[in-house]
Image 1 (cartoon, one colour):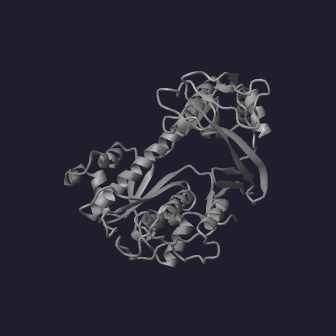
Image 2 (cartoon, rainbow, N blue to C red; image 1 turned 180 degrees about the vertical axis):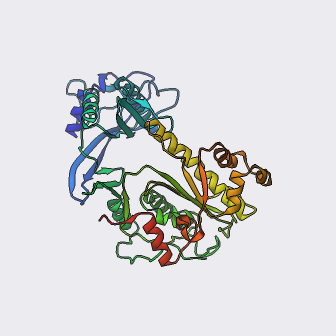
Image 3 (cartoon, helix red, strand yellow; image 1 turned 60 degrees about the vertical axis):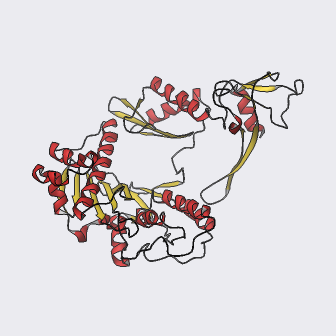
Length: 435
């Protein structure tokens, strides 16, 4: 608490003033957290003073805010005074926006430009070198082609902001990063997974061989309704975050959103291994009318950068498709959206592909619709958004290619599979322990 208090004083967060009349006085409280290392050992004990922003009133004190001195740190001379905030404090409704505005407005002075595709990504080019800065609230990642430039940015930021250099990236928002001897980067969520198992009281449970079996369907009126679905919904949300490194459970997690009873999914300690190769390949598919409750189809796609899957999705389509071709065409459009976004990110980094991205689809009719204007009139009833893929193919921005169903790796994101096929697709997704 003393370390936090001293830091706030050094930063000039407030000045002591008598309580002003006719002003809303916002309270404060201490928040305690034990920061742990990846192995579960205690890293440090952290105390944070936060404002009780729930007591703020819009239009009254969003621009000028006052806070009580916390108990235990009363001023010996002015014990009845309050703190007039000169800078934002954690907990205030406007604090995240104020911090974001201050930090992002300073980055251009260091030569950074904002990415057109991601508001959290900033790029700096110096000759042939590049520095990338990604931030989430108050967690920041800085990397680049020149270690000297990276260190220069860290030094410059440290002169303006109270920052702690954590060294080489090993842990970020629940993602664990390790660096293999062959140059690969291994990403996993082992600690996050262990904590999730404890939360679900499933530490001693045996793993399943596959997250969803083929043709296994459940109706909404089956099973027993939970009196309080809060815990279940919390677990499903946590599992959705786990799909950042576990695309193999994405279909099961997506499907579990429909039900009020817990669906068991496998929780196997495997993760992604990323390598450096710059070819963009996409596999997309759909399971036509796969949901027996709504008859909506499920879209699935995987985007590979070289041999590495970098983006994937398993999501129910927003409307019923009248044919398998229509469902596949929608899936093609969704993957085209994602590819366009990735291309823009690469463009912001001044990297351009030698050849257009290649989209693989196992439906010949959908491929025809995307590349042949004559067939395009058959689905004129579709929303304009779904003709996005057709336009990109016609312009040559992306290429489409047929892939046999047995080689469609994205099946793991659209339907349940038997163990042998499931494990084969896990291998295709580069899921496994580090070598």
